[in-house]
Image (cartoon, rainbow, N blue to C red; front, side, top):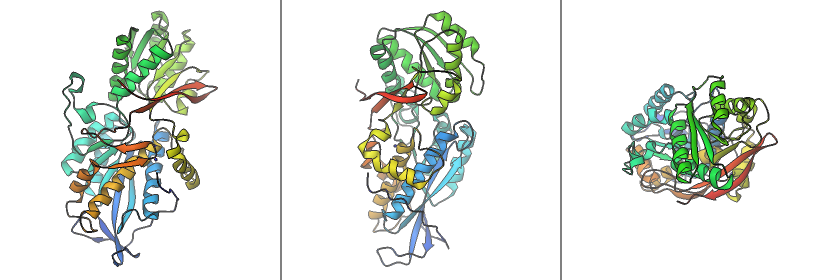
Length: 411
């Protein structure tokens, strides 16, 4: 979710691959600038939920990476290199993500992976990629522990895996930003906090609750729901009886939409607020009734309102993808483009060829990547986290999400 000309052409199809001593294979046909008759193929893996309840987001991730690869090939962004994608479906299940990671590691042409969507899935994949020295860039993970270690909350930050990067900002920022909006802008003073017992939801809701109390608000109740269940009437009644004037939900849109609808049906006509996990049109339809006033935060500024994203939006539409780019399209494009730029640096530093230790060199280059992307400035700090701390609050109005506040987070 931002930069150069994004003309959309079909990706060149590699044929007659021959094994190289370095990572990457050779394609017959075509000419590079060194007068060779072949190009090396570099594969960018994609891991996302391509089927299941979160597939709308996953397909947007896959398509946006595909668009970045098409653009790189059209522009001959890396001389002597043809990029391809290898999309795999994790169904938002950690075990599937781990299996996909193993599959991608085994393909020596894969020099970088974009994904996954879910923080819980990322936890299952990180070690596999790290042991193989394979760069991973998530466009959507927000759990702080993925990049700063399990003790991040105590201030003891330690990067677990040097191969892990992300273009989305963390829940430390998103949760606090949401609490500040709820308390200071929306003037809410009593929050009921619910999570879905998953890595993302628990972390985000905990940070929201801590910041909300710090600002002077009250957390008048907490509870948990189970993913894929549909009856949250017990929680809804607790919300009604608590006197809360806002519900904060840490989780994804299928359950979040149902919870919102059931809270209102129980007689508590108060907004449900959540993070980027509920920022999807399906949250509104899942509510089963009018849920105008519900709120969500999401990383970055609205892509369709960014000057830097205009070309991306135009060319995504021109490509004719079936699914929209959704919440993480721009971030997925930028994640893929970061890998392209790291490959470019690696090739340039090795006299125009992929080195034998290409994966290691791509990871090194990723730490120094910096460019103006779809979503703004793309670069990474010492933990592999994005340096972009822009966020937006959205509100449901007339059965659609509308942005109500965008800002760069500051402590």
